[in-house]
Image (cartoon, rainbow over all chains, first blue to last red; front, side, top):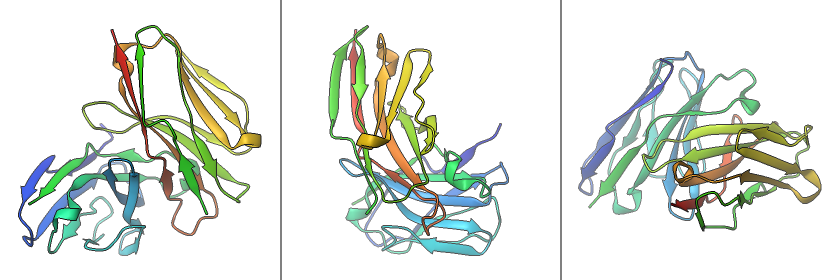
Length: 115
Length: 117
């Protein structure tokens, strides 16, 4: 089954404790992206990747890192989480060719709470 | 600036009522795509429809229909004879053809629809 898999679904952590949210897709998509969803703000892009070893900042990259060593994986790293990073996170992917009209395929989300 | 506005934060209807979710977008680009996504209580994001800027035909899919009007920069979504299973947050989004961020989706704030039995 074609899908984007994120783990974990739920995560509670404390300020400053490094964490990684994993994301993997099995559709051979070139493009992958991370979004965060906050009430009243919709979804905002954190980072995106056009292909392996190619990543770039989205609208709200502060406090996050990503890497794209393999096509299928795009982990989101919070080196020193803070309470304002409490949010619902989504990983997404799509075929790069015709990317502007192709829908994003989203993972099921990771609800992160930082205390 | 590119922007998507969903002015209705929450809508509550009784089952079998028709309901329209509004979406207004802003862009100076002539080529763009518009999307609607559904987020049920379980949290995942489900793609519903896409429409390109050159195709103003309305679309109907079962109880769902979409009305795209470039003149008013709107892409509204109507659910006919709503059902409890339609309860969800609905997002409208804009994707720009020449945008320099790999075709980023710009989302509206979302409209939470509650359909009561």
